[in-house]
Image 1 (cartoon, rainbow, N blue to C red):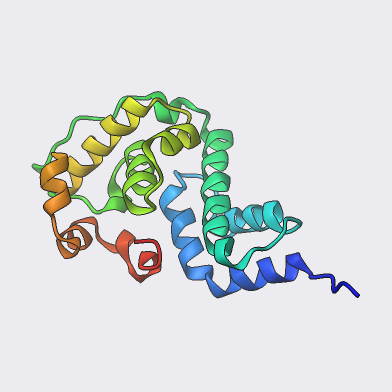
Image 2 (cartoon, helix red, strand yellow):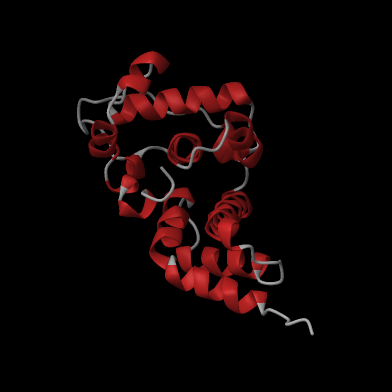
Length: 178
């Protein structure tokens, strides 16, 4: 006798259990349009009928939220957002910026690659840009947040310094991803 498992209920439970973390992912990756709750609903709808594998559940949920938020940005404001050059970096008035204040393209590239640890290639594919553009956007984001840009120096930077510089984006919500 084979017992049928309700995958939708398991996905729903995971989304409820990790609601805060998934909402934060959506908030960071949304540009101006859309609500995090709508993004979570779209992500859940995309996973609801897929098999649920416990070891990969949370990772799959985050990935679904990432994809839903990026898709929302493209449908809401067109794709110009990723190809538009970032503005000049000026620290005179604003000082160092938390991740949430960094321009969207830089924030998305930094968040996917540096916080969620997606590969450079995977980040580029998700955002529809080149690998070189991911590196450029990461460099700009790090400058705005006051993080070291050189990879050797960056690797030596302590996690606590990075957490302080980035701000609330590195909250306890991402402790499971780092």
